[in-house]
Image 1: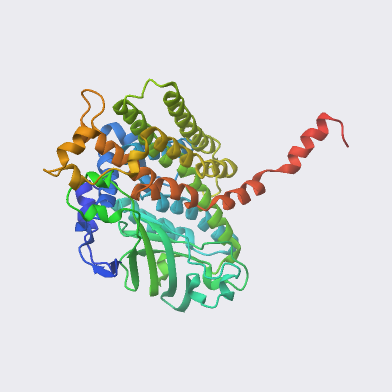
Image 2 (image 1 turned 120 degrees about the vertical axis):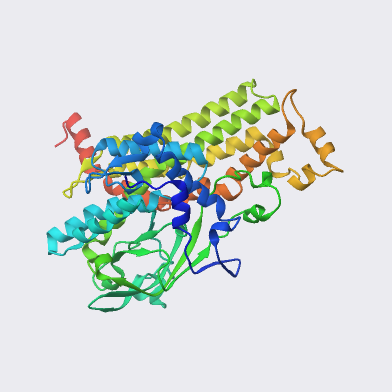
Length: 481
């Protein structure tokens, strides 16, 4: 059965990569304290997929091979698959309280599956069969695949071919009978370092004359010519200090990578789009739709943990019976379940593409993500309100454990009888981490900008709104010709 164990996954990513952090080249990144929590998160996915109680959500039967595979390598074959995706993502958010990094490649593959089929049907290419062969390898080896869409974009007022530096958008710079050579950069790449492979996609709908930018391909993340720069996050160096309490979520974490392609060779068999500008918008929009659907699961699971932390800190503070605290917790639950409802709704209205795979309802997926750009901020605000200002004034773990002043800090951090100051300290640091620290990147900021910033969803909502049909409704009611 092609399912990796967490230990097998860890061994499989121990390979040389051209990685930089804080201006220094990093060797054996899997041992680096800043990176280890993000690896632990991915390992958790592999671990849970091995457990009988989670197999219904974390595994599926491949329509390509008939084998049991990790759901993150599955091509959706039904509405039920779309719904299980959301339930799985909520579960993993609950288990890790952070971004688990495997969704982007999952969503890219499902978008590319139908787009390659339609390119072939229209112009007689062979992209779909190439992609299926590529993806069978992914399924059989249970590989982690990232998705890379966002270019650096340079001068945002100019199109790709108009840029002072044409490499502001990843492009083909040369080609031969065996493949293409690409140059450019992809930014905000969640989990790229922890992935075995990546699917590269255009970042916007392209036009005639921009064919060199209309490319999609698969590539190994340690391919020659790829340089990785680890993204800086708030409070990240706390992971390098002695002790672990100041980290907040000291077990798990996310990861963002700046990826530079410097004349990277891509063989023909790994190319899934090359110059077909007419289909670039379809790929961009379908990937965005799948990924906006995802936020109705993953952010909800993290929200569950933050709500739990807020409820628990109110007990530790002795305020759990206050009516305004209970009302704030109810509001947090209301907002979180609204997000989940959107994720389930856009999945429930899914439909089958010509290629045979299933896709979510695009309008509701964009409504889902538009809500995600707002509600986690309010949930986070209420968590900070309930926890109190001490989440950003708490002394360090070194002070807390100091023989000289530690006992005094414990004395004055004590609250209700039977509540350990150590446990209260852990909880306050966790809430700080999720609302203001490293984890806030994957909960709040990613809620805003992941899968496109708010305006991109509003554009798609306006396209899908079907106002002409709505005008017909009122005309019919009022007998207006």
